[in-house]
Image 1 (spheres, rainbow, N blue to C red):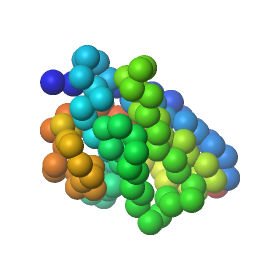
Image 2: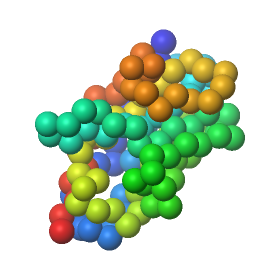
Image 3: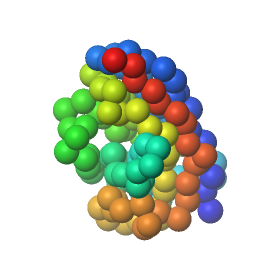
Image 4: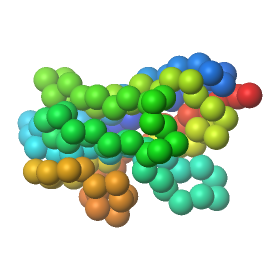
Length: 125
């Protein structure tokens, strides 16, 4: 099993940047693909980005392509989400999630068994 803890959320002005971190426990973190998801009030949890266990494959929601970058440092058991040119519509709670995977990380939240507690991102206009 793996435990996940997100950090780095906060209040940022539109057009600004923020970096979220997802720290994982356990010695086998490099066997897990990791995804970032977000959930705004009254909305379903949505896919943001995902990265394969070795970091060689990444995937993004169309709404964040060119603005957000997912990366990982397996030596530090950490996955990052660099958020640039943020917009008010990016406001949500952001969650990282992990799944033991050999292949392409799935973009569907119900395929991830391990979740962090979430971190709030608020973008002011």
